[in-house]
Image (tube, rainbow, N blue to C red; front, side):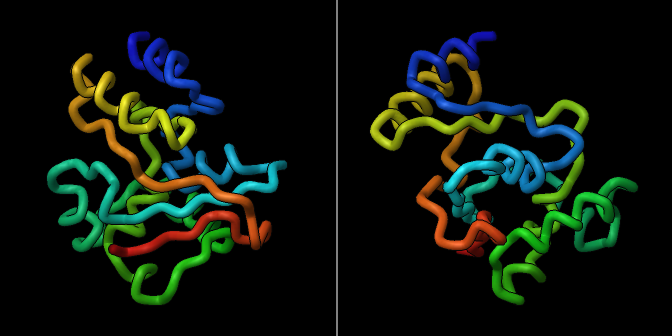
Length: 143
């Protein structure tokens, strides 16, 4: 509830919880029917301890293969697609975090407020821009 209040006060224009479709699926859903695209840097993702180790060992959710279908709507080079963190974009959660679109000039204030409220892993994972390629509106970078 307090996160929602903070996001609203900082002008969030869209928000979703990261659940069964993973970050990629939910972000693509947020971009649907718009002329917007997003760029996400894998190095900015808040990743739980052990998650990369699990992916590298081939341990993923039974829903992971279904979610990987979103990969065709993602622009990323081969090296990025091979990064273990890339696989986590499709990781289904039952109680994931929130993903919100906050105006550029309010991002830092919003993050400061969220962290003060106890959301210590709150962070900026990317940016939303005008779409050049609506077939692949999500661009993933690896650093």
